[in-house]
Amino acid sequence: MMPLLPRFFRFLKRSFADPGTFFLILYAAAFYLPANAQVDSAMVKSHAEIEKQGQEQQLASWQNQTKLIVGTMPTFFEKDSAKGSQYLTLNWMRGVVELEDHRVMPKRNEYLFFNFDKINNKLYLINQAGTVWSYPIDSVRGFTLGDGDRIYSFEKIEVISDRFFLSPVIKSQKGYSLYKRLITKMVAANYRSEGYYTTGEKHDEFVDYYEYYLVFPDRSTYKKFYLKESAIRKIFKEVSVQPDDYVKNPVTEESLVSMIESINEKIFRKVK
Image (cartoon, rainbow, N blue to C red; front, side, top):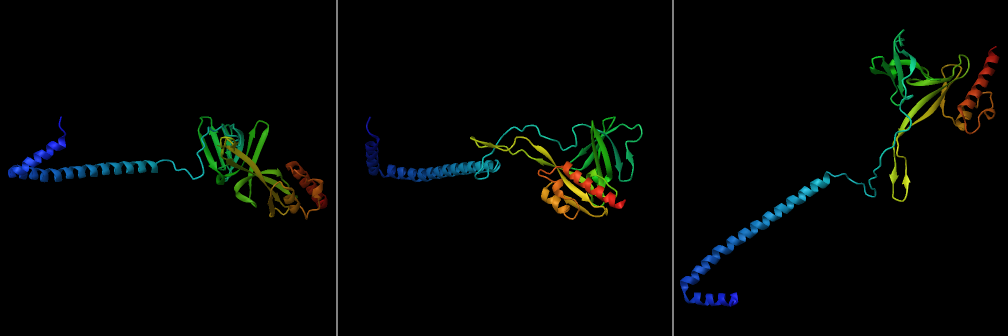
């Protein structure tokens, strides 16, 4: 087969000899080349638009993905069961409740059980039909609940606050009285695995701690404190009892009670 280019050049040479054929070739070339260029341009433009749409869709999908903070990696783990509870106990309890309007529950022959939400300060009740309802703190004056051998008592002390309940530790009409406030906080699971070591806990935990309130004999003065030696020494520095005889680290509620009872005994002797 002869090469195409030499045959094409010989065809052009013969075309120059025939003016009609030559002008026909020029006309065809003038029509075909712009049309072909327009088709190529449209194809390039269409391809660019398709590519642009693809990029925009990819960017949109990235925006919907979870954002990662620079320097951190996501940690996935299965939580263990929570420790502790936001409720006073895990059981419904027998009890007696006094509302702010001085109504007392349960009534005679009424079937009611109770529990207390320590975080939200709500008293929950359930009746024999299984209906559950609650009273907020501003509706309840005080209550006593029993769980086996354990008795829980809560009341409001007007001189301190009517926004939370206090449990009596020592109640005295003429001497010092001691109350404590139960506070519960939820500590969320914070487990992390870095491959070669782990930190934190896999479980949520409800942690209880106490604030203590000492009400003075005048019944209008009180001090809030925690079970720390420095705090107790500061409160009792003007009282005629040597804290060294009672307060030793770690400070316990029992040692604090012994000290206050000793102070009250001295007060009673003076009154007599």
